[in-house]
Length: 476
Image 1 (spheres, helix red, strand yellow):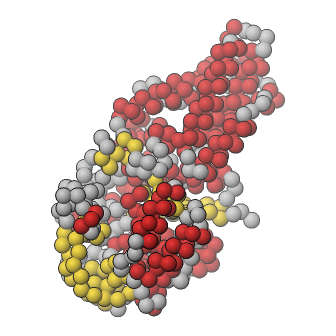
Image 2 (image 1 turned 135 degrees about the horizontal axis):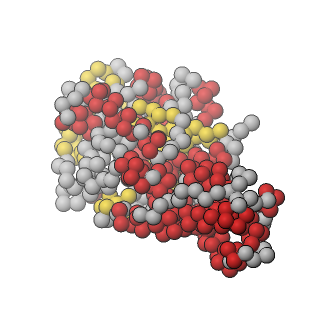
Image 3 (image 1 turned 45 degrees about the horizontal axis):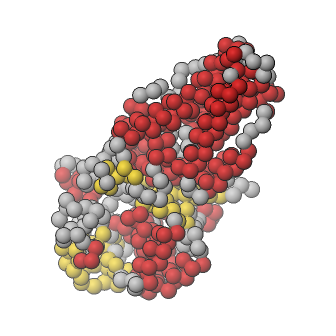
């Protein structure tokens, strides 16, 4: 029986078009999902859209649209990432789905039955950009550091609260028991330090008369759920909870991929909520860095974003995937510029991998009329490197894995340069056959990263007659 593996991204808000910052998250999750499928695992890969909350409500109002219609239009834009970036997710959940809404309400009831929900008056400083309360210690010049262009809102009303403070010891025990619960380790240490300092109960509802766009609170028609409470439930509603427990139990717990600003919500708040509802914690939370623009985090609200769909249409899907996976360190922020994109494309793809494929296929076509003995393709392969690449993927070091693959490309080029098969040397066919082996190994190792390119290479070099074809990556 195949091992089951469930991976999910966070859900992006539908208050603007998709941007490359989120494309980084879902492409990285896609690599993990593809890798597990190649291992023979049965994979459930969840993606979708977060459609409630003040940001979405205000965006729809600004465009003069019905909120649900607005969500329908923008959800379709995010789902278009599947084709644009060749993503392999097999579930697209929307928090406006009827099943999700019912699941969120049932989850609320479970937390309420556990004695973890109560009502009180309160006053906070609230960042609409983050959809989070901000304390004075977190502010810079009186503003949220992530959304300095937005005025903080002062919210003073009676809402429901979740007893987060009850879960300090249970969360610390979770982190102690599972040393790799949050990756990388410095993020685990960060969330541990946050919890050790003491937890404050947090608001989980809003007055409907002030902000009507949300999931109705069970038993109180005057309140709607706070967007974080509602949205986080998608991780379990996506796999059938609470109606199909057989399906749910076969997939849960999940590996979650999230940005570093979501550490508190994913690594502590959500885990406490799961405990309250009597459910098992997530399996693992992988925290990634962000795409920045001139050192500033890309954000729809800051207006400094790059559209990944447009980028893929212009330069190719695998070129965009490669840049995101190779140029950006998984756990750290990295800066995007079109100049660096073109430089990486030309150096690694056009002059590197693409040139090797063209070079070898051209020589085979000229020297042997495209024919290479199939048995000779079983020339010694770099098994050690292939094993190292798999290990790096399992450590979520995609940059390191692609550097190893580039090393294979370089070694294949050096073999050609040293043996000079184009001169008609006696061992020319053996050298070319060995290079075909290297290229097929490269194609295999590229499957999780550049699936289209991998298929093209394997198709070109697995036939009885190898011919030179159009460049995989024309130089920019």
